[in-house]
Amino acid sequence: MDVLELYRKTGALLEGHFLLRSGRHSPVFLQSAALLQHPLYAEAVGEAIARKFEDERIDFVIGPAIGGVVLSFVTARAAGARALFAEKTPEGGMTIRAGLEVNEGERFLAVEDVVTTGASLRRAIEAARARGAVPVGAAAIIDRSAGPVAFGVPFHALASVQVPSYEPEACPLCRAGVPLEEV
Ligand SMILES: [Zn+2]
Image (cartoon, rainbow, N blue to C red; front, side, top):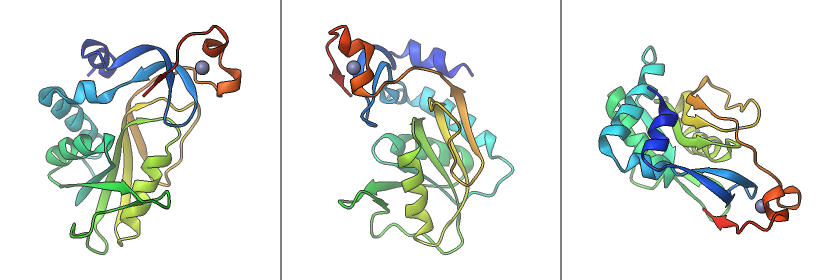
């Protein structure tokens, strides 16, 4: 599956001048929700991720809200597992909503649409580990990190893209006066 072609086709690959969640500026933004709004494409992506871990027993999939919710669901469906999500806490970590059961020793896969620094995927992994579950892998639709990202478990992305991002003070788009869009 050509994931980047899917992003292009669904308008999920935007070009301009964007303020990323990480605080950096970039000429490219990947709006995965534009792709995942199409259930058939979302399912295809979930199946492709699940295939990367088909030799693992997975009890549940978890993704950081909001971006990871749909991806968790479609991956879980393909893997025959439950679909959970982790939510931000006021303290800057992530937690699993009370009432969602996680059993000691359950094996899970953590997923996120796009990995830039990997911070939110790591927090989602920590949220599930805090409930006694064991991570078996991490996955993203797209890896746009500049270097290797470490999660302490095998990591697979369906595609890797090298798009530049800049600290605001070093951003050539700012210098050129291109309006900044918050995403
Ligand atoms: Zn800029």
